[in-house]
Image 1 (spheres, rainbow, N blue to C red):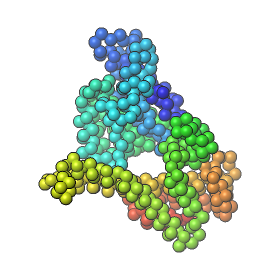
Image 2 (image 1 turned 90 degrees about the vertical axis):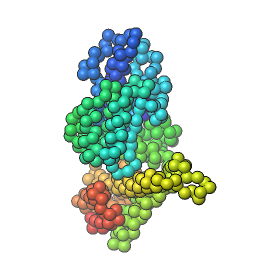
Image 3 (image 1 turned 135 degrees about the vertical axis):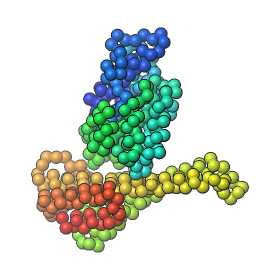
Image 4 (image 1 turned 30 degrees about the vertical axis):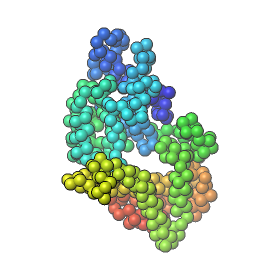
Length: 410
């Protein structure tokens, strides 16, 4: 299995990254004593298809983080086949395997479970990036949420991207080029991924997760090619139940009481998701930190003097993670709702577009018959306005209540 196998529907991107990895391998090989360098090897970084900073962009679910991690693995490939002209990125060697599973000493993958990445965390990354590889071929920093950098953090990162260490590679991921500071994106090589075809996502679910063809196709169609959501929908019964509840909402906003009740249920479901994450992660984190700080069992679990600040920092981080989990859960529900009204509009306009929500066609047809395309567009705008309000940190319940009232008015 090559490192690129999980990168679905992105053939052009695969080709570019594979070519860059081959040049990167040749550049490192040229520095090794007694090595045989291919005649086609580039003489310098500027003459190669490799560069020190990359920006992966694409819509949610397109696989931009998957592409970055696969490239990181290819850069660390130590397969003997490379000496025989084989391309790096075999997927089996120690370099590829450890990079893909997250244990390679020279591959740092950064993903945040809070709302933003601050200056302190970014400075730590920059310090890490200034070091030479511990044993691998490159020092690789994968920043999966570059769009969550605060302005101050972005300015800290800029210097490192401008003048990286000789064997350091920055791989930044963001939904769009506009989500990254202009000064940073101008110093990166841009790779734009597209939403993969439904058939490609369904094939991946069948091949990698053993999902039955009908279920795989239904999940891929329902999520409109979003790889992560499709896998979750196909494998998680709770995810299917939550989606089913969201898709009933358009039929429940006939009066103000129904609007308010539906809004509260959406908020409660998002809160339940946050609580579930807390139960799975927070308790373990807290126990591990207390043990590391030396909270002895015979002292009633009392922490040693001077460590309360460390525990408070963990609690603050857990609180921020809970907020993000709730926002992400709400955003997912609003995405499903947008898809529902998109299907309504497709029926009203008589287009040949495939319905994403074929499993609730009766509900889609009922809403389509009882309204007009103009009302459907206003409802889609109401959902978009709710997402924008949440991005501006409007109180979630107020934002969702305003949306459900607008859906009723149409």
